[in-house]
Image (cartoon, rainbow, N blue to C red; front, side, top):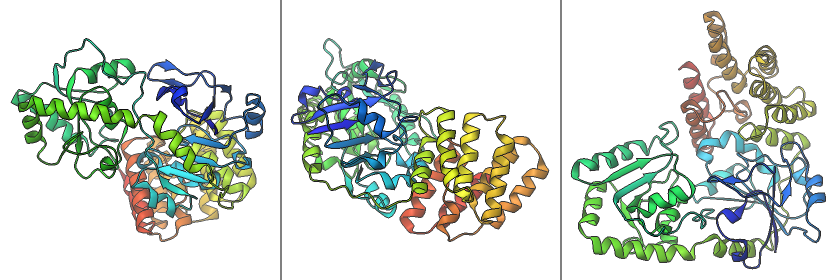
Length: 463
């Protein structure tokens, strides 16, 4: 099976291990850096500015994909015209808890969407086709293995994102880890260690602590046992039992975290036995085993993208590009295309304003302001425009402008209309306010009412 992919999957496993799968990767030649190592794409291609037809023309002679696998479209732009692809296109999404406002409009592009268990009903509600569970994670074999000659001198170790805005639920648990030092536990908590250095760190740990954010079995759940440490994972994880036997190949903890850690350290033979069993088991879960299984399941997948208009596709692609590595100029060009297709649609006006600010923040303030005012004239209850006007007003420091935009925002509340909340808001990225809104949007979709999102927008705007 010939698979075209935007991610250098050889960072996880050797291509020779992908039995029955011939892989071809695409992307800008300068990208493809994973944990400090450059995995150059097979086909040099910039999806932020080039189209699907161009990508097809550049494919190696004799390579005609049976499947296009697109990882993380909230990080990597979709090629223009991807909807013209004649073979199944499968999307893979990960941190939707952070980036949902940028993902919601991508439903026209995929014949199937792969996500964690908690995400399946969410994306089904968002009209994505063929939503199914697939654990996309595995250890990266070039980095994650038992590094010889390293003594296990760390009792309990963790490396990960320490940003409290992003990992707010995890933060109190990390404090508990650190306090274990008072009980004589040699504990180390870090961020920013990657690649082989991360593998060496885990090889020095007896226990690797983990806590997922969505109940998913995340990257760390494979990295820790691959490096020979015992995996300590939260109770209630939705996926762990499908990959490891709790109590035999990993250990689960609840509010008894401290007791669990101390008991493990007091019984080194049990700790070593579980760590070795987990290490053996994780070898079965290497990507070289799981990707061919997935491709075999997808081989008969029909082309079943939902019907969509050119404007819906243009709006969805450009909105997702806001959060990617694409240049501001490329994002603005994509947004302008959507605006040309529907010049009177407030969603297109809102997107154009945000794209201009992302490209040229200072010079674009006045045209962005005008676009949001136009959007509210077109649809007086269009919440994103009112929220963004107030964000811009607060940047000016003008009490008069803030008061005027507060009045406009109040007119948008409360709302029971999905169309009135359809659009991204400032601040872009992953600040505490942005994460709050992404989580509120998730709640609104799961509950079937836009009220939760509207309230979160109003509260964030008044902060």
